[in-house]
Image (tube, rainbow, N blue to C red):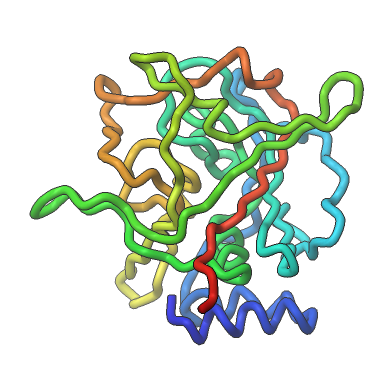
Amino acid sequence: MHLVVVVHCVRLIAVGTLSSLLMWATPAHAQFGGAAPKATSATEGKVVDPPKLPAPEGAKRLTKADEVWVDTKNHRIFVDGYVSLREGFLEMLACLAGTKEHESILGVRTKAQTVHAALLAVGAETGHPVQFRPKFAPPTGTEIEIEVQWLDDKGQWQKARAQDWIRDSKTKKPMTQPWVFAGSGFWKDEQGKDFYMAESGDLICVSNFTTAMLDIPIESSQSNEGLLFEANSEKIPPLGTPVRMLLTPKLKEKK
């Protein structure tokens, strides 16, 4: 995304014209499908509607359909979802609801384009997704810190580094790698319309995908026999628990 787009995103939020934000964050003729995907149960495959968390203070919701809020003052965004997986190997921390919950700890109720636009609005810059040919090149982009927040059975807020919910499948130690804003990409149909590839579900990945919006900057296989990470079950709340992700870009200091 060009710098002028990022600047305009921030201006649009500042003056309250959130409905115009996504038009500036993506190509004018891009297509992203319909409403935000509905939540589905990881165990039954049925549409479910987990309880909702109270809206974050000091942040503006981007759209009625997507559970994404932007806090421009503190340069951070909030994305709500639910626990969809507690055990097994992982390809993602978070996917879009109704897509890949069988390999992702969280399902989130939003479209990928909305999260992308929100990150642009708080100053994050895209790099490029992973490249496999002619040789491997890791994904790049602004580093994004991710914190997970939820209410325990006593109604008290709990929080953790998202990496603590993920562990190395061999060492069993928490993941140490950061996430970077790779930015996914677009493909054109026969009519020349652009489609945002992360809408397939690849929102916040721990295996490398060329379609990933956020990815980790190391070589991390997506083949079943080569998956590097698994769910750190003892750290993750029960299935269906509402969870809020706090995404904060590590911005460069202005000189």
